[in-house]
Amino acid sequence: MQTESEQLFEESKKYIPGGVNSPVRAFGSVGRSPIFIKKAKGSRIFDEDGREYIDYVCSWGPGILGHAKETVIEAVKAACDDGLTFGAPTRKELEIAELITAHMPSMEMSRMVNSGTEAVMSAIRAARGFTGRDYIVKFKGCYHGHSDGLLVKAGSGVITQTVANSAGVPEGYAKYTLVAEYNDEESVKQLFDAYKGQIAAIIVEPVAANMGVVPPKAGFLEFLRDITQTDGALLIFDEVITGFRLAPGGAQEYFHIKPDLTTLGKIVGGGMPVGTYGGRREIMQCVAPLGEVYQAGTLSGNPIAMTAGIETLKLLDAHPEVYAKLEGKTAGLAQAAREAFGNRVCVNQIGSLMSIFFTDKQVVDMDTAMTSDTKQYAAFFRHMLDHGINLAPSQFEAMFISDAHTEEDIRKTIDVMKEFAHR
Image (cartoon, rainbow, N blue to C red; front, top):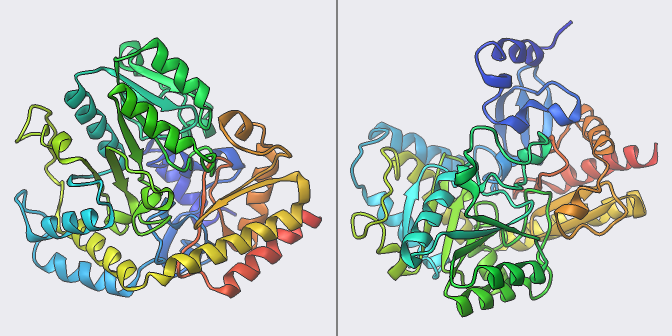
């Protein structure tokens, strides 16, 4: 007999490509049908069949405070009473822009958009417009959304779907995208030597989190900062995941690196569909209506999303101890995984991000990430899900720990993980 989730999935496939609105949700790489979520609260999600799970997806990162945080929900409900969207400026847009700059001083000016993909697309356009150059350097395995020019050796669901690039993208769209190896300085030097004075920007996840979690090697981000400054190119930090998660000021605060442009999403919108890009004033003044780099959006900066973001950032400001607590819980979970599996796995962890790779190699880039046994991960995923633990349905995604995860949640997760490791 089919579960409610299975029935909903079958019906959804009649009307939605693959039955889902984002590919990794289809559970294709883990050999299951997806669970359909009815509600969530704190560290838990509840599916349409009434089953409860400890959730380590956290909506792919926004849920740093846990699901349905009361003060955020109350503020959003109150904002809805005043209207959903106006297509006109509001006080809340100014308020969140001020909060962003206070946390990330490198973002002297910022522009709200509606997704991380849109933020990255717009930041790259601004970088090209400001520098007058065409080429962009990205890193193999880093995912920056699904805009045409960046679906080149990308991470995230592109790996899961075994799509190296995407159909429907003309070759000319990607020809100005140069690909280097993450954590490999020499690969970057070679590109800058070959395209001297032609590269507009490097875009990088300061902590790669879309080939699984892969922290930068010591000195790697500093090297990127130096080589871009020497060549006259810009450095773009894609902090859609790391922004407000690694530290109040994101990865740039954590690593003490000041990029020229930054892209944000997820936490900055408190779970609402939001993205932001911003950086040095002189660069952002190239954006319309001040400059000739055009970008617009009917729903950009809508008051409901701004309210959720403002309330989330204010809560994080009021409780700075959250970050140390998150680090402690995540480090404890990571260490427990290392002890349970031994040298059968590589566990990468930084802040409240972690990944368990089923490989005996140290995962430092896309090539080493791809040595992971995805069939073993799929078996691990199914075991955890069957015992009430919801992980990312892909080897190449991150686990996210939230403030709502209790010590009891962590202990249960470790116990279930050990069952799998020792069977």
